[in-house]
Image 1 (cartoon, rainbow, N blue to C red):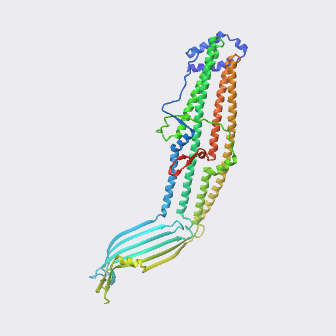
Image 2 (image 1 turned 30 degrees about the vertical axis):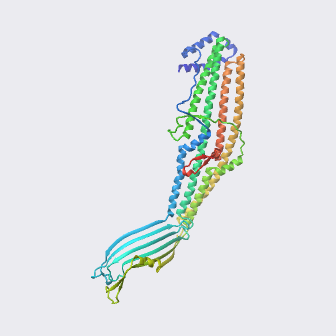
Image 3 (image 1 turned 60 degrees about the horizontal axis):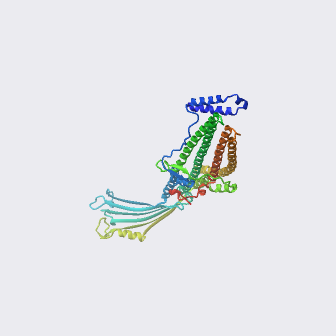
Length: 566
């Protein structure tokens, strides 16, 4: 700590001494300067001159993985955990759609039961042999099917009812008696629920929501690709910044070595060595900061391209292969705005919301109509069994003869349509006065107008964002050109200062300042190119063309199939 305090004191004090006027320098003797340097060295607890700088490397534990920008994008689309979660949303909407469509799945019904009863003998018609109550044994076995019809909202029901009755009644015509009947009932709405009902509305809205889930997934993938590109370029910039810092440190090392040589041969004052050494320490600190920034940028990139801490890339060192190139692309703003209005997911989602609101408005209008339902019923009955033919004596329970029969007789009369029946009717329900449906229609109409206005608002916002992005792209391109020119001039200035310094026409301070200016110019150029690359990424994202420009094709996003290269 004490050593660093001394170095900071020298960094502040030495430039002041060097910038002093010539008469002031004359007042400080060479012996005094040597004494000051010795005191500073003694206070730091080390001899004059620093040890050779050691390169500070990033943590290289684990393998090194070379990674291009396209590789990073593909890894992110395949392994990113946020995208894996988003891929499940379309599948959930598929399940919801299947659940809604299940309303139109046919339903089968069956019934089987057996009963026995003994009636009270309250009349001559309810007597059995021995003047006791009639005992009846009944077996029922029915089946049916019902089907909701998607077109028109009708309901079709078909049932086949069968039963077997056996009794000891004196007046039974069949014993046992078999009854069978077909019955078809169809109910058709004529006004309300004819064009649309709650189920069909749910199916339409769910289908639109399914499309919205796909659009949202595409938006998430587009944003992910943009984030990966930005993180990749940040990491590249951090890597190049480490190289620039290393080059700057090497220049400072060379200046220290050269100054020490000049001090040894007596052509330079020892105080100039201290100034060079202070600059050397500053450059070493800048290298440490650059390497820390590189580690942070690497971690940010890994967060986007790995599937978890067990991923092989998590513990590896990423080696970015691509380097940012500067190409001053010409921007067709009008075409970019048209493309954005066509491709932007927020515009597509807003238009899908209009579809949902239109469907809801149509449903509410339908619910305000009177209920007019037509119903048609058609049935056929059959009867059979062992027939009892009594003699015509006028006395109940007189002698009889039997004609054998069974269930086949009942089915035979059923299929021959011997005992048909049908009914046709219309049921009407009409609300009197203003109903809640009318208020719901008015509210839905206002909400639809709001959504339509929001679409216009979003379209204007899209045009504004794309225009601003184009302006920013133009500005960053000009900044790159200016930074490149500044870096070239800074390099020439350093070369000139070094040449002048070697022949004694420049000072140590001016060389150090030229080195600093070159370092700043290199970093400014890197930052300008990075900003330009990010501006291009943002310009593509705002047009929603990031996936197309990266040659990424979404394949069955709802099924979780990933993205593959086109």
